Length: 400
Length: 103
Image 1 (cartoon, rainbow over the protein chains, first blue to last red):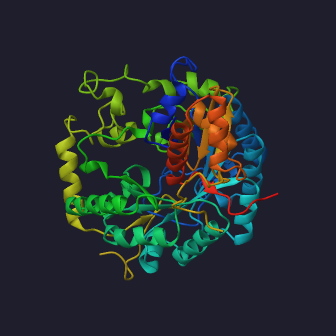
Image 2 (cartoon, rainbow over the protein chains, first blue to last red; image 1 turned 135 degrees about the vertical axis):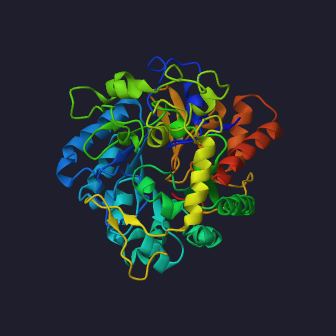
Image 3 (cartoon, rainbow over the protein chains, first blue to last red; image 1 turned 45 degrees about the vertical axis):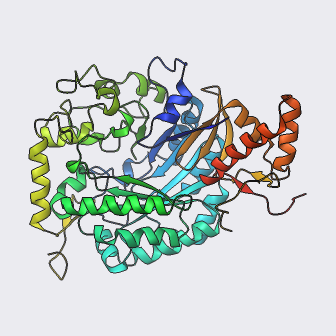
């Protein structure tokens, strides 16, 4: 007997999905995802320069209402989604979050909260747990308060995160620490791993910045050196072995330095979608950065299942038929599906090209060199994320 | 209080799923699943049967007795399989142990 391991429902592993779909024809080719990311708002008190939200943020007035979100949650459960990730922006900026989590529980969805934690009180976290919240993921910008608060653009953020992480464990909720890593904090990695252990986290995501949207604007300030990357991989591998059974560590490398591209989102429109604050159904959270694609909304007169299965945006880069060379005849085409469409678009101007993270891309060498140059340039000044399109860090004592 | 880690499953254990690991029948796909933080696991039929017995009251020894009778199988073989499967789940943090009997 066995517990088949283990579909990480967000991005990477496909085995759980494969296990669940074996021998079954689910909606022709593409089954409904096991998990969906609900970006319930783009509002956030933090201003992290690598924010994964689009540069053009949805305003509060455009957000789905409580009733609209509840209807969406019901529909997701009905079509076979099992887990919901409440994310943002900062999801706790929504006053109705407890109500939304309770509704998710009522319709049978397993709910994860992906939060910066800075707006939470102990009472609110307890209310979320009572409403059925099953897991909390807290982002950290480092392990040292002053430097972490500088990245977040929010004084006191780090201390508050530590406090909320403790409440999370006191309430017997499993905790994931999400640490976004870049040139300016990679030297803290060993200490961040220890911080996750000390916080009694179950899981640590060591996630090197991926360069779309805000992070692309800030690439020169964030890109690690190749030497840092090698050191990082060494530290992670050592910690994974040492902490087996205590802390699970997921590791995302910066793919400008990779040899093979990542299987982004498990393949476009294959096992994941997210819903933007205004209700657009997107193949990934960065998909709106690809201009020329039209995304359908839950406010349209189409069902979510119809949008997933039939909409132009989902079908454009599904499977392998859209591919050009070198992907088209590549033996890895169903391993990585050509990498990341958003990155291909950002770096080549055509989302249908091979992700330059792949060594087979004609641009790979150039991208690798660009990364090295930007890392060596050591321009550390951030452009902070906000609704105004970004604000450069002032010169007063920060940066290079 | 913090979840127990590094549980060592034995015949004396009275395991149960913690509240963040939920055994559920997935109507859409017509299979049992375990829902866990950002993960969905697909237990096989016998694993499901064992997990349904994990109520924090029954000991592993009781479960093994029950399954050995039901499948007319050798008790030691069943015990080895059941403990290995539960230990695997415990190592992933998806199984906990009842400390005292609840009534």
